[in-house]
Length: 91
Image (cartoon, rainbow, N blue to C red; front, top):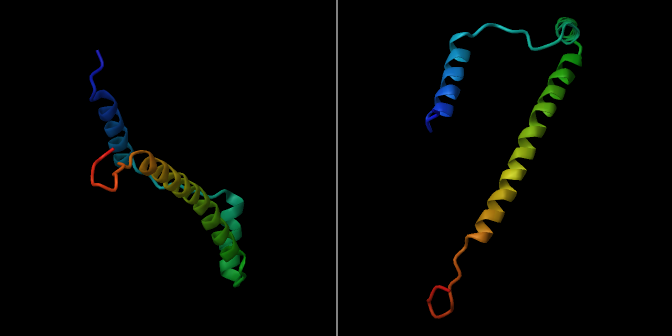
């Protein structure tokens, strides 16, 4: 028998395990990290370009989510507005 709390408890357990089992990971491929390290050591601007590209790729999903949220908010707000007649009565 599955109670209404089961999905919440499963998500909570996974979140707690992921927090408690933290390990350092390398998020870049070997080529990217080598390129960034060498460019920083030699004074080149390739590392800055790499970081700007990562920020650009990171920002696009957030901008899409904000746009969808804004459209959803506008649609929900439009459908649930209460209409009032000029005489102060609700229609």
